[in-house]
Length: 109
Image (cartoon, rainbow, N blue to C red):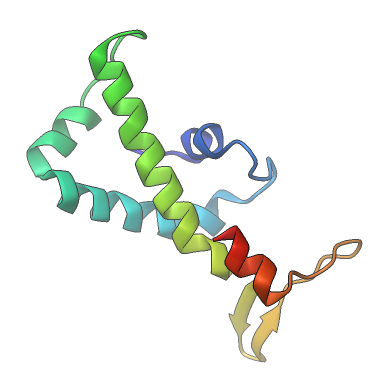
């Protein structure tokens, strides 16, 4: 139900160049969580159609997509900073950027 394009539209401030593979596991988890919250019948109903703009169904689908997008982003947020590999855990600090302090991270959440 959530694509990378929908997630970027809902979040707005996320980088345009972020790789879909980076967020896909978190999107799948958010969809499973949301299905459990609203029930499989309503989830299937929302996933089965494309409503016309301005209708109640359109607003409901938009709210559902926003809820799942923000949940996926909340799950992904800490993982966007750290990478786990054969060398252990590494902090990602691209050149020209400054790492967040703990209080900035907590404040952002």
